[in-house]
Image (cartoon, rainbow, N blue to C red; front, side, top):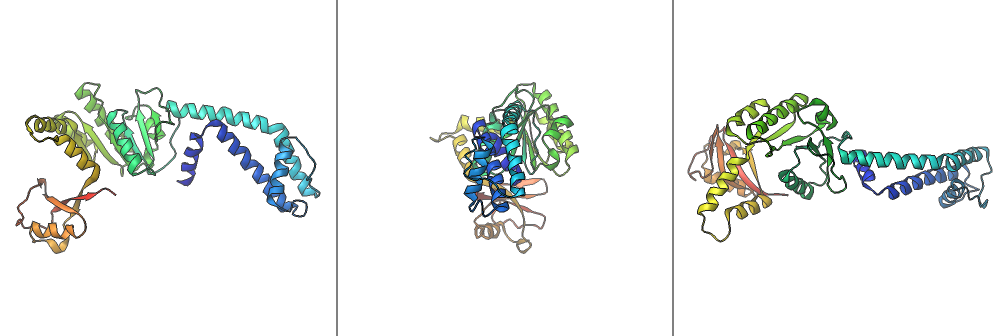
Length: 333
């Protein structure tokens, strides 16, 4: 994880900074080695590093020179790499760095990290979600898969772009899906609704086939395909049309100064909904006692789930059952 982070950080730096840092590391390594080989001739680490820079740049002041055989062998190696190979090495680094940067932007470079989030589809929902992830979980790697984009400037977005069809194994392998933590499949609203849902189903099947432990959250547009996406292997299926239609309805008849949409967005930015198993000691207790129990844990119980039934406004005297799950709210950390 640390190596992958440093690698991503390194290749996001300007080319000049990358080249300078590479030269500095090489000079420091040779300087430290010379200090250990000839401690009398090079009494400090700085003396060794100074000698390395002077020798590699072919300036050759001659104020510090190696005396022992091992020291001279190290000097020969540095002279060869400094006078002959450094220019070739730097030009190669520059060329490969430029090529790697271009491939990153074009989505041609495979992702090697682990425990990452995969987002399918580059749209406004994906951009908003990326911003939330970056703000709340900056340490979490994000991989975007999209087949319509030809280029995505990697310096402007904190993600790794893979260009391709998310329903194809070769694309998922480039996204390293075998080691991914979760995947979010957004619906392509530019296509026919049924066609978009079919693509979501195919993508879900491909992802589940490549990683049986992957958490898959899929968006559908038509009600008839919701169950099919769940059968395909999605853990959570969101029908955004239901959500938006409900908001339209409430906005049509609300009379408050502040809209329901604004209140809901503010609520979702500050709170998160959790589903918790009912503690054993609360079996047969009233829902009121459940609310008091979770309040002591800084959580607000707002309802419960019993089988397929969800009750978001239960009677406070409702007795709880062992198979119930409690729906709670808590502040996002």
